[in-house]
Amino acid sequence: MPEPEIVEFVIQGVTVDGKPFRPSDWAERLCGVMSAFGADNRMQYSPYVHPVTAAGVRCVIVDVRLEEVEPMAYRFLLSFAKDNELKIRDGRDANRSELAKVQRAGDTD
Image (cartoon, rainbow, N blue to C red; front, top):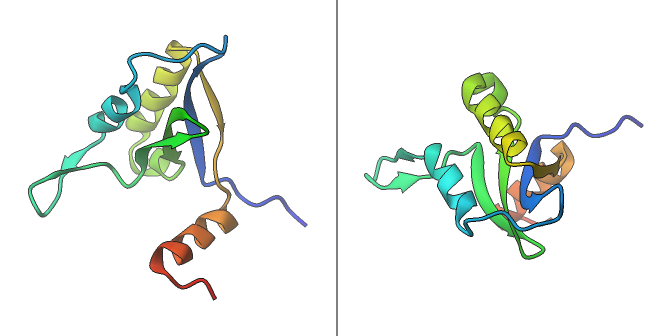
């Protein structure tokens, strides 16, 4: 059985040396760069980039489709992680991503 396709990666707020990345709101700031005003005239995070906390660590989730939609933004995010020596790991695969959509909609059958 082939490996499921990875649909996102995670930039973790921990350096390769294991130190927490500062400032503590770095994830929100980075995602803010990718924000835009929505129909309700409020700033909204991009559907391709959003901050989360995983196991107590601030992280940024990046949807790999961003590379097709906005290659410069995608390269910027990767460069940010590399320049700041942040850990990057694979995120959800296509199957887990679809399950999350179903669960958010409340249909768990």
